[in-house]
Amino acid sequence: MSAVAQPRRTRNSRLVRALTAVGTGAAVLALPLIGAADASAAPRTTTTPATTPAGYPNNLDGWIRESLAIMAEKHIPGTYNGIHRNIIRESSGNPKAINLWDSNAAKGIPSKGLLQVIDPTFNAYHVAGTSFDIYDPVANITAACNYAAARYGSIDNVFGAY
Image (tube, rainbow, N blue to C red; front, top):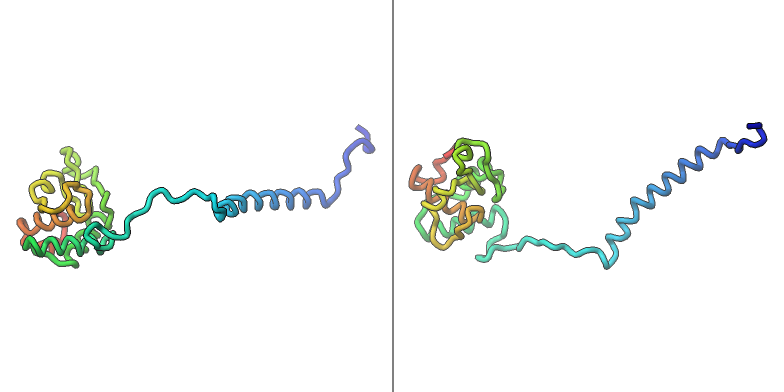
């Protein structure tokens, strides 16, 4: 091909291509942000209630305080600090925690919930007036504290796996 027939390249063509690519990329990134501010943005489909049915905050602090109120009615010993310390060690505050690797799990009965209770223990130490769902934070805490009271005198006396 002769030199006359070849397209002419200028030094600026590389710069123009780079700026075009950057501009296009910025527009692509900006479009979702613009759309999200629009009134047609999708509404949230799931929300967590701010309080429990009993009126406590629906968080770790509220679950512990609600459990302590039930425990006081049922004469089950325990303190906020003892419960909190054990929850943080057992589940890091995750009410849906489940242990699928320890000896209980190997037997087919994994530890569940905030205080990592197995089903037979939860059923045996369930406290009337709480949910029968082992993952319910208040039911899990209250049953675990009831068990700890029977076995160790109080959840406050538990400093390791129990």
